[in-house]
Image (cartoon, rainbow, N blue to C red; front, side, top):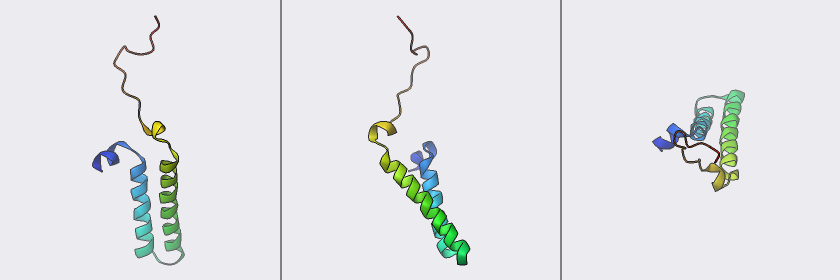
Length: 74
């Protein structure tokens, strides 16, 4: 979990969405609470949709290229 939080951007946004939902439902009242909860839920929805929409092939990273091992011609 700690490794994923360090290397990828989307877990940070997902945690932010969860925190917004929790804060919106527990600490903020009235219309502001609804807006904060809705914003957090939308963050979670968009991140989840994005993660599920990507195929396994597009989520893998390319292996590193050694120095000088670029696309050199014959």
